[in-house]
Length: 157
Image 1 (cartoon, rainbow, N blue to C red):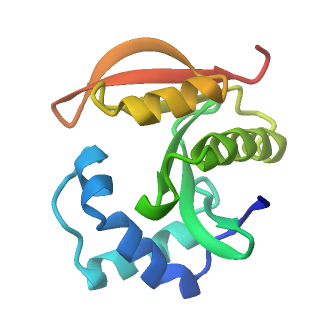
Image 2: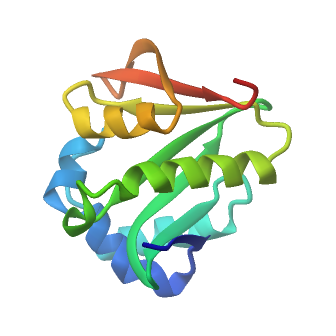
């Protein structure tokens, strides 16, 4: 098993669109409505230009299996978002992707000391994935009016 992360490109538009619209991904999202392709293309075009929001494709043996995105929210903190395609779940790939992406992000963004993930409490698989990757439950909060857990990884711990 060789997992690799690479920068997303516009050529990944269809893969990312299909991933974002998988029913289980929509259910875990804080915006559960389906996404239309023109809206997705506009979003992707903006994300690819945003230096404070790296978007990476996770590949297994050269085939895309998921995405990981960071959004810098302050001088010292960024939020992480991950999605692994349904067929690749339950195999430990998510944990490897979160570990590797978090490390690579810290290496690239030297001023960021904290990474935060917001996860719905009933999404036990994601909570477990992030905890196995070193993230710790820090607090509970509401995101778009939905109860969520806030998991944090600190660069120095």
